[in-house]
Structure formats: C-alpha cells, structure tokens
Amino acid sequence: MPRGSSPKRERQYEHIKESAEDRGESPKRAEEIAARTVNKERARSGESKTASRTSTRDMSSSKRGGQRSSGGAKGPTYDQLYEEAKRRGIHGRSSMNKSELKQSLGH
Image: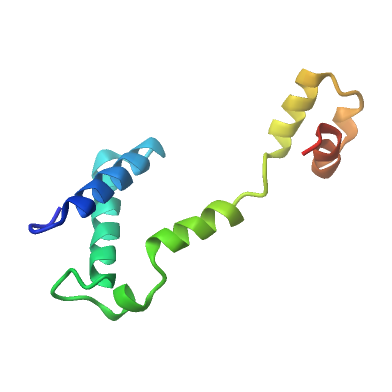
C-alpha cells in the first residue's frame, strides 16, 4: 500500500487481495490487482495527488463488480443441471436440453 493510506484503504486492499487469491490468482497478481483497484478508488475520491483522466471519469470498480456479478453467467451449466437431475432421478434427462433441465428441476 502507498504511504499515507487510510485504515479504510488498508482494509480494502487486504479484502481485494484475499478475494483475488480465493479466485485462484497468484499472490503477486493478487497484490497487483488490489493495489491498482485501491489506487484508482483513491484517485476517484481525491485522496491522491495525481490522477489520470480515466481514473476519475471511469466507472468505479465497486459498481463494475456489482454489474458483473449479476449479469455474468446465466445460471448453472448444462453439466451441473444434468448431474442434479441425475441425483434426483429425473427420467428422460439424457434427451433434455439446458432449458428443459432447468424447467424440470424448477430453476
């Protein structure tokens, strides 16, 4: 973390770093992601001496992350649905497509 960072930014850095490591990033890459994200947030809120135009005008990382979490994958994969149908003993599952599996499972 840069010198002069607030306790809030320190916590934010650690949280982002841990999340990146949990997703499978290497420790070095997780540190880079956390540092870049925190530095951008500092620039957006006027806590840094210099800031690029994209840092101050771009969408905040927290808003971008929130949009990604809801609009990303469209639910479970076909294989996951098929395995659930298999566990529940749903007949005819082998000839069903993804939407039919979803419907039969009540998803």
